[in-house]
Image (tube, rainbow, N blue to C red; front, side):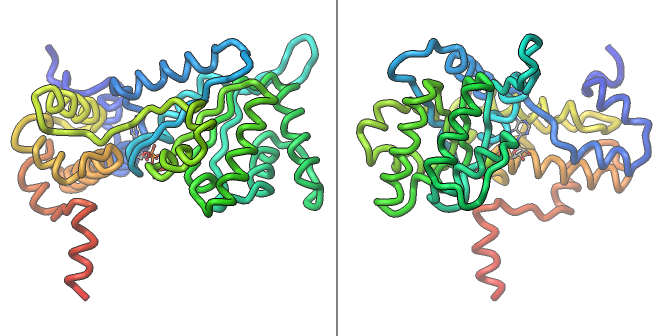
Length: 303
Ligand SMILES: Nc1ncnc2c1ncn2[C@@H]1O[C@H](COP(=O)(O)OP(=O)(O)OP(=O)(O)O)[C@@H](O)[C@H]1O
Ligand SMILES: [Mg+2]
């Protein structure tokens, strides 16, 4: 047992660096492979290795904002980077990953696809031309999966816009015979229900908020906190996964991983700045933390 068993190697290495470097390190994004994320990654593996069949299955990942959907997708996409086919010297792009445009505008959507693949197009090319270019590029690049993040933007619009878009997604999926993975907030889930044909073809994975109701939930949440803590370069363990901190962290985060990570970054930054060996009650007190859901009320009262 060493004195620094509470830290991962990288965090330990940075312990002797300057305050600025330690604070920068704290605030960098670091992947935490919590069990639910691993499950969804495995699900995605099943989809990408699915055989080409007439009716390709698609997947919708639904969850509240700031709860880790995009991080999971990015992590998955990193497993399948672009490469060059040794025989034909052409690009191979197993995954095309876009974030949906803000409105259900098919032209904007196709432009995102073309730009993601760095395919030159002319602005006034017709929709049909753009669609064909995108399809052809994905075919020659042996694309095996299309990921559309923030999918609620394009499918949860007015009824007609929605219908049009759902059809064009259905078209893409039929022509390319690749799975389409959408991620978005709950609105996206309601939107696919508009079209029963589509609803049938989208399986759904819900990325729930972190709960704190029964023992199982509490253990999972404690494990999340513990793994984040091993990445905070502090001299001594803070035991944030124990009472009373864990309860406070759950309350302050509203069960959202994005908030958990942000709060822990703030706590660690404060501790490092003030030469504290770990995070304790005083740090929580000094930061005056308020849950995101309560911040709005607070603002209203101040007006
Ligand atoms: N697996 C993870 N490991 C470490 N940090 C994570 C992880 N997942 C999420 N986070 C943190 O939470 C933040 C929000 O995550 P993300 O952007 O994936 O949420 P989202 O569900 O896509 O939200 P939105 O619906 O608003 O786009 C990230 O910026 C990151 O700081
Ligand atoms: Mg996101």
